[in-house]
Image (tube, rainbow, N blue to C red; front, top):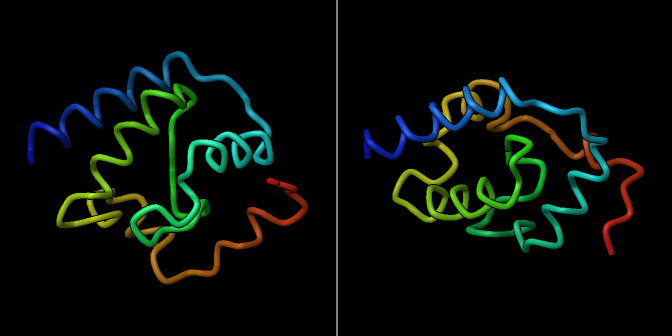
Length: 95
């Protein structure tokens, strides 16, 4: 478990150093296409992902499938859990 969290942190740090700007709706479309909407009971707005989307999506699905679910991400627990997040999807047409 600690190894997974450590690898996630390292991945985030690498992603930050190689960050690029992506439109929120473009990101939502990619996440939707990769079947993250409703995955393990979480909506698209629950996912906080790095710009390296394909490997991050795979990693996110593994972590969210675990016992702690999305709660494994401290930032999600602190800033997203229990809060209305649907405004991040306003104006995004996913289908």
